[in-house]
Amino acid sequence: MIKPYLAEAFNQVPHSANEIHGDKVAKDYGFKGGLVPGVTVSAYLCQPAVEAWGKEWLDRGRAHVQVVSPLYDGEQFEVKISEAGADSYHAQLVRPDGTVSARAEVTMAVAAEPAPQYRGDAIMTRDFKAPLALPENMAKLQAEGCLACKARWSREHDMHTYFRDQAAMPELLKIDGPAWANDAFILGTSNWILAGNAYMNPWVHMETTHQHYEAIPLNTDLVAEMTVEDCFNKKGHEFVDAKVALYDLNDHRCYAVIDLRAIYKLRGL
Image (cartoon, rainbow, N blue to C red; front, top):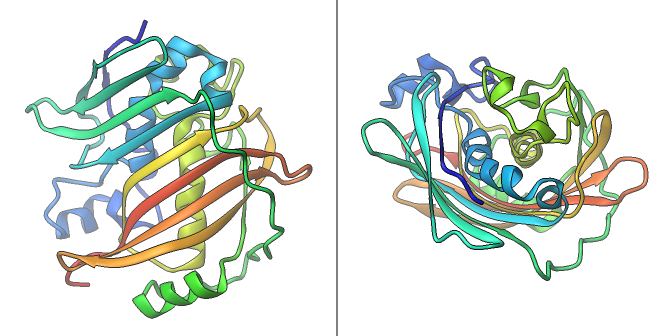
């Protein structure tokens, strides 16, 4: 059964290089404080899937999540469920004043597209300095390709939990339990590779569609590959659409594919 729930939001990265998650810069843009990461908000909406479908969700689940308004650290929220069936549901994350912060369509993929093959893109080095996220540089990434980015799923990672109290996590995701990678971390890899290829600060995660292919065990070394699929201007904001595939660094099996939409340059910057 797909269950709604109440919880308290947690900003794991108030000191992120993306300063929209810190109070100072967020307030400069008219927000009440630093934003809870969009990947964390997405994980909140996918939690009922983990609770209902278990590891099968982590092996083949699919979700489309749109973040539509801010969520702040320490804020109480409710995940409301609608149109729930045996293998799918719709969800909304609702703030105390009734504002919808995000919405999702979540399903067990019956016939997922085949996982993409690892290309072997060059991996960015630690000293790589990304070009500024400008339209001409995004167009270059779209035309010429992107550098791959390494990551490691571990208990030391900021995204090892998406609640301040890990006890609120599903048993399968608890770092002291089975410790399978959670959706905040998995979706986060799409953010890190984008930010690694183009310097953005501040920027805003807006939307993802992600497909799981296999659960990621603790202490797995990973590599993400990215393709920039589109760039456009809307209401003065510069948007990018990117497709990210997440692989095992050693045997190159595909764990997940993420379609990301983000504002890489806010209006007025």
